[in-house]
Image 1 (tube, one colour):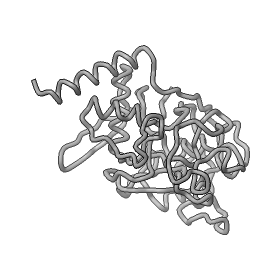
Image 2 (tube, rainbow, N blue to C red):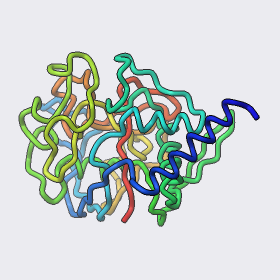
Image 3 (cartoon, rainbow, N blue to C red):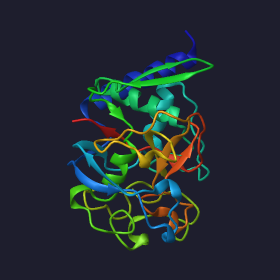
Length: 274
């Protein structure tokens, strides 16, 4: 038997047995509600794709308390043979994983769902030339948050206050960014949480969302639980990173990249249906 195949199989079995007894991530209930998404204030550094501000209704869902750390993502790589992302610091461990593509993120979601014996949220069809993803909307498995869910949660959901950053007006209290990160990502959950108990929604690493990026989407997006447009190829990421200036930590800034690109400062935060 191929040694690499054997080690991969053993890693997968270990993960399934361990996670079935004790889930590796803590999920926070985000109670649904209405909020105003986006930003009309162009003079405050906002870009045109952040406008118009518009009212959105979000249903209840769960979101992971922290970003996914390297040690958990490395288990996925060991179990599946996926190439491990680089970490310039060499520390890995509880540092928020980064250098992750959107495609790797949805693969990770399905792997973790299998480990916990949950229905997989994504149906993934891939080969050397294509990567196609559809959603099982009724599944309880792990998934990426929609862009609207992400912004609602970052603003503190029903408990939200008009903070500049997620959970505070003091950027150093809640966000690793250009002015305090010492040019490195950090362990998850070391700064203050926001109003609903989520850590690092501003800074540390950007976080992939489900949505296809459309710069004009806000002009005609649905009012209820929008899931992004159907035109375009890039996928959205949110939140800023350890390299971001403070103005790029605003909760409405929209980043994007091709789904197969491992963006340097982009990682993963999980979501889940109730």
